[in-house]
Length: 136
View 1 (cartoon, rainbow, N blue to C red):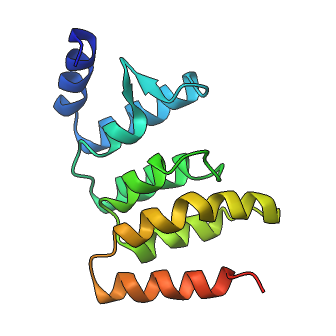
View 2: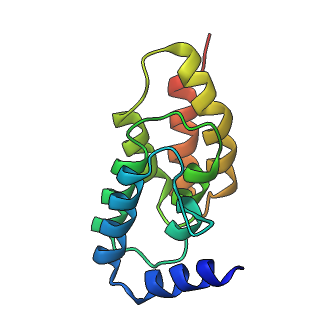
């Protein structure tokens, strides 16, 4: 890790969860094409904090509002600390109408979610979502 990355991470970890969420959102809005700071990508920074539920929701709403993403990084980051049902509720709120965009979303989202199932409740939420959006 470079000195700049270490400095950014140290600063980030010194913030309260609310401050860190605000910092991530503000940074992503000022640098929408990169989603990285000091070489540390936003999805990786999201994993570096313990997020109370209000900040989880705030971050997920912000970073998942323009789905699909062209990689699994954001889905994996949020699935690492959010219950599957909560994450899927946000995904469904922002579900693209276009079938090709849905296919791209599912390509990255479903494997990320499957890896993060930690409970029977998560498994049921995942299976119900997959059935609801299964193509005939």
